[in-house]
Length: 420
Image 1 (tube, rainbow, N blue to C red):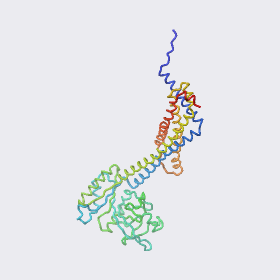
Image 2 (tube, rainbow, N blue to C red):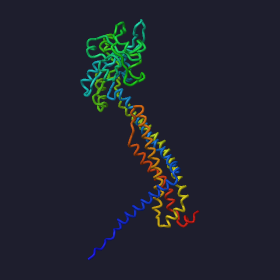
Image 3 (cartoon, helix red, strand yellow):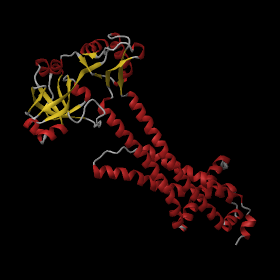
Image 4 (cartoon, one colour):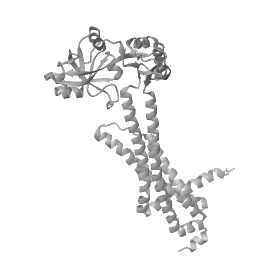
C-alpha cells in the first residue's frame, strides 16, 4: 500500500512563511538604501557623530578618572598621617601645647596591627649657608629612613640616608631637585657639596622629588632639605614632632587603622588636646564621585546628539513613506500585510541607524587607539562602550522609525493606488 505523504504542520508552514517574509523585507530595505545612497549616508552621518561622541565621552571619562586616581595612588592610598591640631574649646584655659612625640609613633606601631612602616617629621625653618657664603631660607625636615617608602619619595641622584646614618647621627642631607639646581647648577654637581644648618656642616648625599607634584600642598616645599630625625632632634633639643606618617600593608584596613591610631594617640595625651588623623580614602571616594558626575554630564550632551540624529532619521523616513505611497499601495494590493509594511520601513530606519552606529564605533575606537600608537601613552578604551553605542543606535532607529513605519502600515491601499 503506497505511503500517504504527511502534510507539513501549521508551525512549519508559519516558520517558512515568516522566513520568506523577513528575507523579502531585508532585501527590499537594502535595495531602498542603495537606490538613494546619498540620502542614507547623510542621515546616517548624524548617528555616526552621536555614536563617536558616546564612545569618546566614555574614553575621556575613563582616562581622566585613571589619571586622577593614579595621582592619588602615587601620593599613597595606604598612607595615614597624624598631626597636632591644638586645644579644644573645652580646654581653652590650658595654654601649653601638647605635641606628638616619637613615643606616640612607637606606641601605634606596637598596638595597631598592619602598620608596615612609619616615620616622624620634625620641621625646622632655617637659613642655609651654601657655597660662596650665600644664605637662603629653607625648610629642613628631620625624618627616618622609612620616610622614603612611606611617602614614595623619588631619589633622582645619589641615595637616601639609611638606618646606619640615622643611628650614627651622620650629618647627611638630601635636597629637592629645584633647590639643588638653583644652588649648584645641576643635580650631579650638588652631590658631595657641604651645606651648613645651624652652623653644622652637612654633606649632600642625594636629591629628591615627590612622586606626584603636590604644588606645595604637602609638608614638602620647593626649598626643602631632608636630614635624619636623630640629627634634627639633637639640633633642636625637642622630643616633639610635627607629623607622623604610617604606611599600612593592606589598603582595606585604612579606615579601621585610622581610628585605632587616633585612639592610641588620644589616650597618651590630655583630654582637651585635638589630633587630626587622616588618610586619602575620602579623597579617592570623592574622586570617583566627581568622575561619575563628569561622565554623566558628558553623556547627557551625547544623548542630545543622538536624539537629534534620531529626529533626522524620523524626518527622512516620513519623507520616504510619502514618496513611496504608490509602492505601498501596490504591495498591499498584492497581499502584503500591515505587519510586513511596518517591518519593512522599521527595518530601513534601523539599518540607517546601524550604518551610522557602525561607522561611529570604528571612528570612536580608532581615535584613542591611534593616539596610543603614535604617542606611546596608554588610553583606556572600553569595549563595552562600543557595544552599548551600537545597541543605542538600534534603539534610536526603532524609537524614531516606528512612527513613519506605523504611518505607512495604516495607509489605505485604494487611496495609495490613486496617489500620483
